[in-house]
Amino acid sequence: MATPKKFGDWAIELGFMTEAQVNHILDQKTISSKRKIGQICKDADFLDDQQLAQILARQYEYDYISLAKMNNTDLFKLIPLHLMTQYQFIPVSQKKDRLQIAIAEPTDFFKIANELDMLLNMDISIAIASAKRIMALLDKFESSQDTLAIVSDDMRLPVVQTSETGETVLSIDKIDAEENPIVKLVNSTIIDAINKKASDIHIESSDQGMIIRYRIDGILYQAIDPLEVKYQSPVISRIKVMSELDIAEKRVPQDGRFKLRMRDRTIDFRISILPTIFGENAVIRILDSESMNSGDGELLLEEMQLPTNELTRIRRMTHAPYGLFLMTGPTGSGKTTTLYRALSEVNSNDVKIITIEDPVEYQLKGITQIQVNEKKGLTFAKGLRSVLRHDPDKVLVGEIRDQETAQIAIQAALTGHLVFTTVHANSSFEVINRFIHMGVEPYNLMSALNCIVAQRLIRTLCKACKIPISLSSEAMIAYGLNPSRRHKKKLYKANGCALCNGTGFKGRKAFIELIELDDDMKQLFIGKAPMTKIKTYAARTGAVFLREAALNEVLRGVTTLTEVNRVTFAKKLKPKVKKA
Image: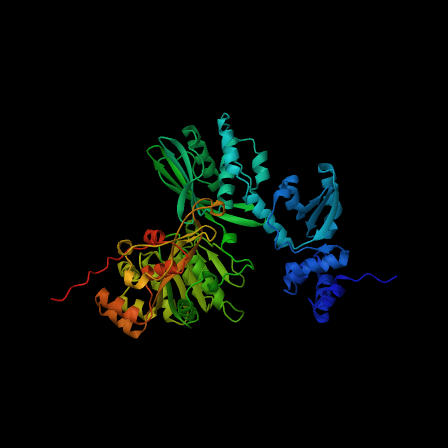
């Protein structure tokens, strides 16, 4: 009888690992006997999730299933979500009395079978699949559950005293088990907002009652019908308890933060409480790093889908040896995400990168990240001073808010460091005035500044339901377009379907205005040249201004003219003067 092949034998036979790599892993297994050999291989970057699943399938003589084309999650309703999450398995097919499930860890099969025996009167067969894809499908299933609509019915019950001990792990099962309707409402609102990819939750008091709204893709949507106003104070108190704020203080604004664990990731929340004439309002900013990264866990500039010329220019600026890489735009315009992408471009083993942020929105591998803590005295300025003593090559300063931080950042840029940072301003050229108002000398700023990148986010049309339109010359002029240049391009408008929840839009993308500051441009700023002259020179050297960049997205069929006018100013076309 042939000896069964071991894990390493299958890894070599399938061509996933070399013999030397297998021997190295076996040595590591000897040192760390409690860790599974597959996890050691993944940690060493010898195997990915799919390759590990294929090896386990061969080793245990089960079928391998990729799950790449699986979209139907109807069978998931047969089994409690917490059970599938605990053992990392999902049902994939049913034929009469036989249910096939996909599992990530074959050794858990008997535990799963025992659980399912008590739930289902079916025979169980198994296949092996990637743990990552199983969890992704479970995430999709959980996000499809409209938890808020269900829980709002419970608000007809009497109010129970708000508990001051909140759960640290949030899931639909915990919401179902919660007896306090206030805690249940807050938790379900948070999980519903995360599932719907909201960036903010607005809890507002009004003469109509308590209103809950989500900001999704930059637009506010009302989540449910207004709830009775008597629930406003308990809900705000619950949020204060979670954020460790003063629940007795109702007359002044308060700011706080808290974290919640949702299955395999931690999500940060920033809280702002504001007293109004009808009661206190709350805005909860959701800082979900999982929604920022790509499928393979990396942040790349290519994912911004910028025009080739703009991608080349911004990439050149990120690889500069020193100087100031400055981003500007309103809150929520994606500045930090773009800076993370820029850092990922230059992140390597021979480069030391340190960031100081408020808050740290996404953890980057191989980069030292510092969280600002003003209550403990760790400000941007104080932290930046310490950062520069740690011999960094590149530095990210989350935001420049005051003169002290600005001066230190500029000095760092002038002394051999590449400094990435953000400043709030409406346009790239207005950033200069912001620095001058902070008390920074224009000459010092210009000496350090490499480029200014202004950014906005624009909603993208749902590909399944967008409708082509034709515009008259008068309509084009009203939108700030030149009919003689645009009439040959096909334009679209939003329609709405089930895939986009009737909005006509699905997702957002960034567009940028990149101003490179060469010596001539710097002289124009220092010499206080008229803005028209500076913009003319910028356009001549390759700059594409925000309005033009947004209109290019319209001409590519990505978005609509209405959406462009929502985020940029429409320029009035100059009338042609007839010659006498």
